[in-house]
Length: 388
Image (cartoon, rainbow, N blue to C red; front, side, top):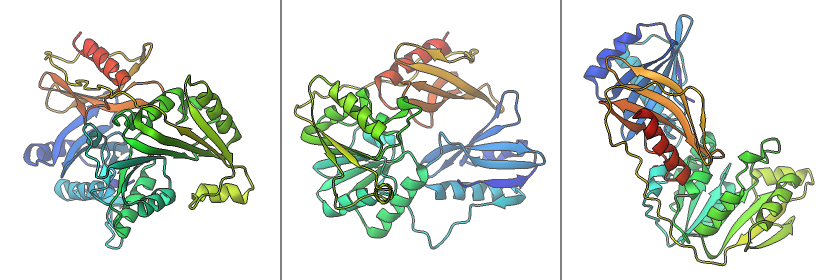
C-alpha cells in the first residue's frame, strides 16, 4: 500500500493547509497517543491518512477503513502533501509508473452504486471472491449479454483484475471491493441468473467466517431468479460436508452434487489442487421460486443536534442481532468536533466506519453503512447513545 516516511516535523503546520486548501479537510489527534488522522479529498474520494510518529520519523499512510481502491489517487495525494507541507522524504513507494495500465474506471463500483443499481445488461451474474479473475473474465468474454459482478475483499486482486479489464477492453464486468455478504443484501430480488462461489477460504478453525451460511443461502435464493443457480466449488472435505449440512437444513431446496467435474476454465487454485490429486466438489443449488422484493429504505441520518459529544462506552455493546464497538476517538484540532472509529452490525459480517461529530451533529464517514437490518438496528442504538 502506498506510504511515505518523512523526517520529523511540526504537524501543526498542516493546519494552515486545512484552512487554505480544499484538498485537506481536518486534522485529528487520538486520545492518549501521538497518532493523528488527516482528512483529505481527491476528486470524488474522501479518505483518511494516518500520521504515526516513529522516533524522529513520521509514517504517513492511508487508513484501511476509508482508503479508495484506486491506489493512484492515494499516491497523488501523498505526493501533493509532500509538496504543500514541504516534507523531507526519507522513503516512499508512491512513484507513478507510466507503463502500468490504469484501473478500469467504469468497472470500479462502490457499495453506494447498489442502493439503486442501474445494470447495463438484462442478465446479471455474481462471482464471490474471484481471486486472479481467470474464471470471471472468461465468463464475461464468452457471454457478452451478461453483466458479471465480481466481488473481492482482497484489494490487490481487485486492482489487478481492474487493470486487465482496461487492457482487454471488457465492458460487461463490475468490480466491487467489499464484503460479498453485505453486498448481496443490497441486490434486488430475482435479479441474478448465477452466483459463483469458487474455492472460498475453508476457515476450519473459524467457521463463522465462512461465506456459505444459512443467511448467505437465504439471500442467494432471494437474489436468484427462477432456475438461477448458486454454484459452490471446493477442494475442502470439511467445507463440502458443512455446505451439504447447511443446504440440507433449508426447508425447501433443490441441489445437486458432482465430483471432479471438468470445466472449460479453472482457477489457479484448482490447478494446484488437481496437481495434488485432490478431489474437487461442485454443489449446485437451484432457485425454484420467485421472491418478494425487500424494502430496505433505512434512514441512516442523525436528526437531532447536541451541544457536546458524550463519553462513549469503551466496552463492546452486544445485543441479540447486532453489536457496536467504539474503537478509537480522534479529536479534531481547533474545534469541538471528533471522529470515532467504530465497528457495528451483524456478528458475522460487521461494518467498519467512522462516526463524524461536527457542528453539533453526527454523520458517517466516508459514507453511510450498507442498508441491512442489523446495521439499522445498530444505527438506532448508536443514536440513543450519542444523544443520551
